[in-house]
Image (cartoon, rainbow, N blue to C red; front, side, top):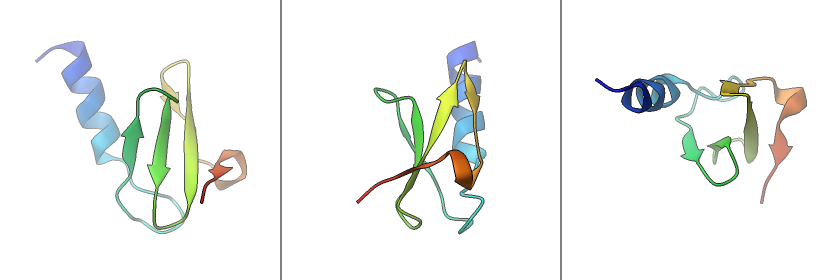
Length: 59
């Protein structure tokens, strides 16, 4: 398994800390998106920041 495949599988295992809903990965914006919570969690230096206070509100 390549490093990219491993990273992707790890991202897919994460859930929204607010709703426990599945997250989708936005590679262009480097964010994990919770449609249920209407939040986008940033990925900084390859590390997901899973704090509601750091998330961006989305429509």
